Image 1: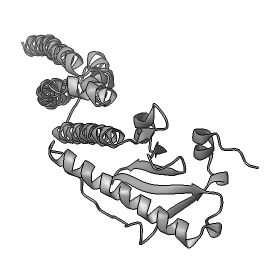
Image 2: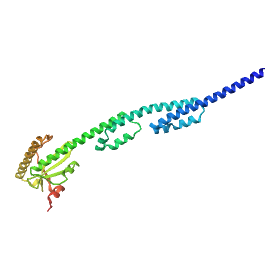
Image 3: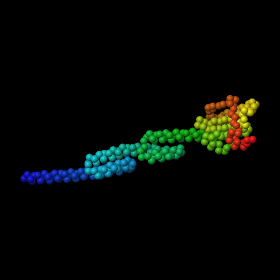
Image 4: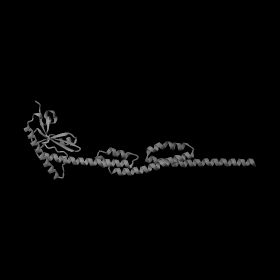
Length: 280
């Protein structure tokens, strides 16, 4: 009787172990299916992160440790939840960015725009900084265009008063920061020298001479009188432009009697080219 009882207990224990094993296998399969489903979602929104987590998925399929498999599921779930939140945020930010695509192209910032649009994860600070820089660039371009338009009108007014350009590409040269010259109606030795810088247009009335030291007082007084004619023309141009809504502000104005600018003919290539000057 006792022997029979022992056999029954052993049978019950074997059945219990078998049921447990079957249950664990079934549970493992259910967890693996969940892991696979979450992993597929993660791959869709962040392939790079999914690739980093692939080894965990492989580990889950190879181990029989249910606790470890559960931990792997929780790890992948947490990564997916966080990534999904960032993904939604990124999609919203990218939709906001799309509005500025044309502007980015116009301002030469399309490369930066495309770089942001290709990023898997975007944060608001990055987007805000890009938009801020983009709008600043646009304002700078618009300001440059307004200055260029004003400058062209200024040059046109100068030419209407009998002055003439030395080079046809004067505006291009000015925009490159080069010094350009305009012939005056007072003789070939008298020129306007212009240079465009960030703080505005610098204009200098000059006379080309062989040697300033050899000039008589009479010649110097005559030069000052001629320069004053330019000053008068300049004031007329300012008045005409103000009537068109273009205000010119003199940041620094040096009158001819305070200082007159002479340039040596022999040392200046622009003068030689413009006048055909030959040294004796």
